[in-house]
Length: 376
Figure (cartoon, rainbow, N blue to C red):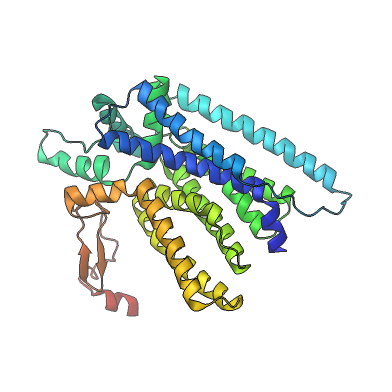
């Protein structure tokens, strides 16, 4: 069942992969232009979009379309399919309305006004993406270093390019909207991979757009919906890769898209840095399992796994590695302002401002050790 479904999902899969590659290339070329000292004017922004759309379009057309098995007639399938088509049209109408709302309404989100929009504003003043600095009292340092600079901003990067190419600052609130179809397509691919038919996989994808929190945050500069969509694309492309591996087929064609999805996840939010290493571990385990199942020689399996995973890491770092590397250069912590401690050993210090959040521990337990908390 899973084998036939994944073959039949190639249309949704190739659209998803092409979209991920397009978004990944926009980030790559924007960072490249910035590092090369090129100002992001409307001309360079348009060049970035063209340079990104070209390879993505070529990839889409070169991805072979494989017809799925013929479906058995179902007396209720016509009405069910018609209902889903109506829901798709409704979702498309709502999606278009969200663009209008993002354009017409000022951002009413706290984080958007706190640091998402200010970061893009300072990029706009400088004409490029840069580490923002200001000669202000030290009380502003946590806001600037942690929020405006520390948190990765691959999602805001795309909006910055969009505003530059259109000359419409009001589109600064459309942060999530270019990524929302990515989440819907990812769910379609995941549903097909898990065995759902066309109708129900389409229904599942459409419902992602209608999730209340997505509707509420889409016309704002919060990045949660976009981040969730990027994470979903990583899951969907990884699932497609794993299914093929278990059949003894290495999904070379999807390698670049999977790497781009991992890179986008790395640059969307701080926790996204965990995606490339976790995906690599899952791939390594799947390669070994597939090798033993299909009686591949151990040497050949290890070599293919090493090549595939190395190329995956290379693409992921080229797409999203700029943000943790920049953080490390400026602060010594690639995930600033988040700190990492293991068993009391500080791997990366927490540079966040003290006292912003109240202690989560009950009164009288503040000084307990972590072991005592676990036992309690």
